[in-house]
Amino acid sequence: MCNKDCCALKTALQIRRMKILIEQRRQQEEEANAKPKNIIVTPESLIYSYDDIEKMAKLIISRSETRPKFGLVCGSNLDTLTDLIENPIVIDYSDIPKFPDCTIHDHKGKLFVGTLMGATVIALQGRFHHYEGNSLASCSMPVRVLKLCGIEYMILTCAAGAVNKNYKVGDIMLIKDHINMFGWFGNNPLNGPNDLRFGDRHVIMADAYDEGLIEKALEIGLEIGQEDRMHLGVYACLGGPVYETATEQRFLRSIGVDAVGMSLVQEVIYARHCGLKVFSFSLISMPPIEQPDMPESVRDVSIHQGQIVCMELLSRMIYKIQNNL
Ligand SMILES: O=P(O)(O)O[C@H]1O[C@H](CO)[C@@H](O)[C@H]1O
Ligand SMILES: Nc1nc2[nH]cnc2c(=O)[nH]1
Image (cartoon, rainbow, N blue to C red; front, side, top):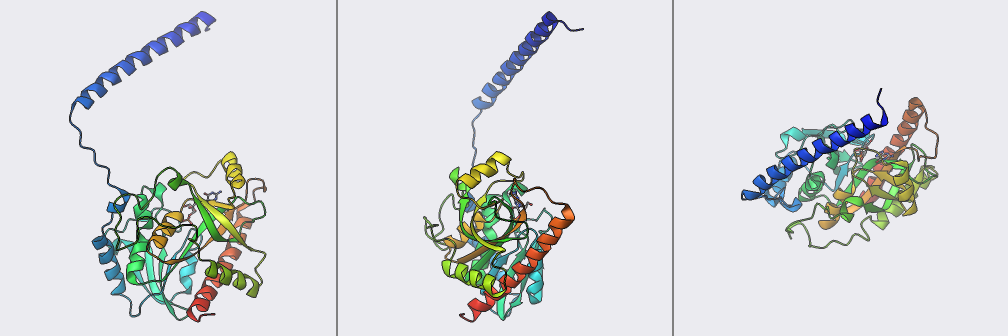
């Protein structure tokens, strides 16, 4: 039986042990600090050189007969978008020098080059997330590769959790703006020396998501009778891999966020830096915290319905751009 005195003695002993440990650590630190140091932190922008990017682009273009106009990144739950591509040439990421590996479900690590609605498209079935251990520059690097392949339009897609209480699983949010939590704390894939061959030092982000393309997407929503499922909203990028807490979600809502995820904004930054037109949408894959959780089978059906609408949206969007409609 432990009485009060016994507990107090145990606590005092624990504190004494901790103090000894701290003293030992201090001595070790002093010794370590006495040695000369040469710590070099590679700035984000130096992780891939222009030559690295050019080599990757050349390899990809060598497999395509026509000049690509569209780049596409397929998000989680959206790998089926590549089913739309006719006669694709498929390249494994492992065959592209310096391309990282994909480590998460739905991101298969394959690049598709082929035609969609008469236009040449390069699609990435697999994106790189920071929480997988990639630098921010690695997450956005494919955008530069696609730019050097000759694309003009960057279509970025992702799965996201609803923050807006009116959103449901299977809905689609056309992204009109974003909040980049990484950027707030000084983390940006453009950090470090700026290579003018890609773009200017400072990048205007106030018009990052092309308004004309958003207009077209809204028109498509009406044409296919899916306007109720399609929303226009603000995406926030958090670090992941954990999902946001309930309080974080309420905070995001209070600052104007409609959906939350763990990707995309780094790619948008590179795309705007090199002058690409950006169109982005999220497939809502999680309900807002206030909505009761649904059985997985019901959620899967809603996501599947959303995937079909995303496929229709993508092909009609490319058709409209291609034909100046
Ligand atoms: O953003 P994408 O790649 O669609 O993936 C989203 O889905 C994963 C979580 O389910 C996270 O990686 C999140 O960012
Ligand atoms: N709630 C939530 N759902 C997601 N689905 C994909 N990414 C996310 C996220 O960051 N949060």
